[in-house]
Length: 583
Ligand code: ADP
Picture (tube, protein in one colour):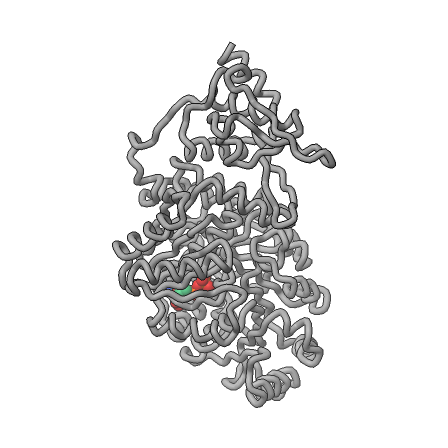
């Protein structure tokens, strides 16, 4: 038996089958539908491809009035409209790109609905209307129409797709989304539903506050006031995560990627995310050349002209371009389900960003690869790029922590992106094993290792464990000496210095008197050099930054910013370490 005790239970399932051809709810869909039918404010965080759309489309169909959906991109909206019309659902969109007549017709029908000239349950009534946040901000007559729908009781709910775009603490902040704070103020009786695939705790808090939603309620017998929060584990078992070492030499890197693609995905669709616009062009060119055109690449970034972007999308859809080399500008609008691999040529600016970008693989549920090429140097390069962004540095550290980890399951690492799961509440079916069992806090499967990411598959004997206490002490000592002398070192500068390279010299800027070279006597100060290779010491430096033994300091120069490594907050521990382990 499958009965939530809600009067609409049967109708929901019936419509789901009849209109969308779907037999059973997935993840937390049923609870979300129930809460929607009940007119609650909702935040719903479900993984990409999890089936968020159904959770408002089904209630939209069943209830009276029109559901207004705010979505960031026209391409996403167009997709949804096509899908809904195929299913025979009355849905319209209002975007800048539409033909005049089409827009006029949509507005006319909405107006009829507001004026009560279209019965809300008549076939002709519009059940869903999609638009972008810009529309709300810029189109006064549209806002007036929403007001009319509101006053006539024909506004069923607002749905905000990609709601993390609301928060400047998230990885994809959009100014136009800020305007959405007016919804609750201007239309206080209309429930609001916020949807996202990544919404870390701080972003969630910010989002609830910005929208003016009541606090999130938890517990099975929640009161009927607060915002109901739903989440499903973000883990997608068809995605196979792997972090590979990135060589310092670009040419080697390009060859590695070509070999990887030709070996594992010779005829597949994929994305290669790059650090910068320039890099995405170079990578596209290199993949093409080194593979003798067997890898058909295209380029996408913010500087690519709109017409070119459109033709790239088309070429990608029809297969004449297989691999798109892009910056993160290539994102939300991607409607291709069969992306078999996403390669990160460089780390992302945050773990959330990485989750989203890599998550563009395998929307169709089939096995797909997510590969990250990582080298520590990319970490400090990125820090200099986000130096002016709020929280930019701490976000990168979350990414670096993920990348440096060779043991923890990637699924469990990603779980930190999700606020803690809410206990089951009354919107879930009590009799259904599916709904409650998989969402109750007693469910331990969320914490079990996935068994198929690189860290799960790694043989234990390939992990090298070594005591780095002495090396760490030397590194911190070198950093402290340089710092006390007023000098500055970069990540690789510190690595070299500690390894006794470059003649043991470092530079101190003396203002008007110019630069002075200082000598470091490794033998006398540290009892010799650090005996590990360049790559390994760079990894160690990043780990020391993550543990706050070292810190990074950003300096703007004439050409670009440079990140220097300086002793961190925990430097006093150094003394302790040295006494115990060295003297
Ligand atoms: P999201 O917005 O969460 O990324 P979508 O709403 O686009 O995901 O849904 C992804 C795909 O899953 C769609 O093709 C949709 O029809 C399908 N789908 C949604 N719910 C179910 C379900 N309960 N059972 C089977 N397929 C579903």
